[in-house]
Length: 517
Image (tube, rainbow, N blue to C red):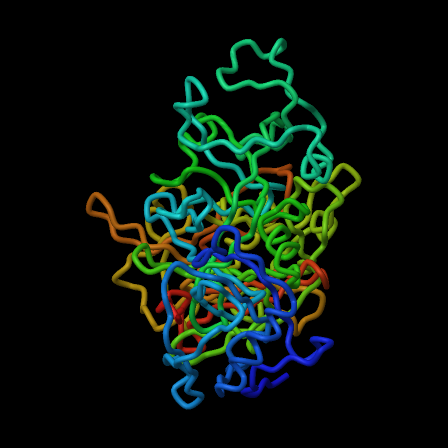
């Protein structure tokens, strides 16, 4: 629906414009200042009579009014320039004239998503620790039910994170359906133990062993967005997460990453809590960058638009497949892969029965940004590699495999491989979903990875053998997701996927992070 510039007017019923008297991350209500509906209506009338316009095409028309420590003397909106200028007005109903700041609230927020070059893992940069001075870096996990940060301390005052623990009797703990409360008599070695605090259980990233951790709450801040740029920070109050020990991070996440961002199916996941707090759709979209120096972007609470330079809306380039939601909130997202084709024509031999989840929870196709490369059950891996090698040797490519570089089994001399705007010119790999025309096409930019070290320079097929009986038949890894837009719609239970955005003359690093104030 198109929005047009409108005057800031409010009927007695308030039907023309939703208003809220709220403090935000950039402004605070002065001490002892009382604001009521009559004052709000009077203020809006004052602004409207001064000719102030709001461009509602930028954000949904939710007006947020607050009182700031920065004096504003003049302010007006120029609809042609889409910018605010200052205009003079007086407020008659305060004995001391307060300072006013106005912004429009958006239900959509975003976060930069970055790739670590050594581990090829993706992490989010967001503001979790108040005050919001430095961003917190959290590993992206599409399985975890709730986020956590590292807390290292010998006593509460020395902790690397300023604690906001939840009492067991609190409404938040009740909402979490906490399975346990702390009892320090049974935990004498815990230096920060306090009785009666809310706890959670989660599965370790590597071995999925379930451990008990303390529940915390703090404010999460993310920039609002119109799909083109970030704006000011939007605060999600009482964001629930947890604290965990340093050992969970060793050897698993990039340097500087201090925890995990849960993007799983749970109502306590980051997207679900953002959706609940901002009354936005329970939808998030990821566009991971393949560049270690330029971030991709994660959108929360919006089905689009998703604009990337030069003015490409990737929400218009999505195919959709059902997202199979697991009954276990610790489980990964599943998609209904039915077949695989190589070079658009060669069907990979596979046992269809292993593509579905059995009664014990094994099988199926999952997605994981915490797995660097796609992992396949042994028989599928062997069939796919055989088809890929045969097609690569055909007249269209004339490639001959060379000595492989660990951990890969198929590599080609870099000098023999033609590199195009969509990556190495190699046979495509098509992941066929519910019908033959719903295809996730993997081009050379995603199927191949360059290994240049110790005098060796090769392009390798970025697939790994997962063994005979892996928990998931196929795990689509991070290398196959970079420069792809993936939209996880938990409300409609579907996955939108773009395949490589390089074919649309853009990339995930092309989001414009210039702040729109």
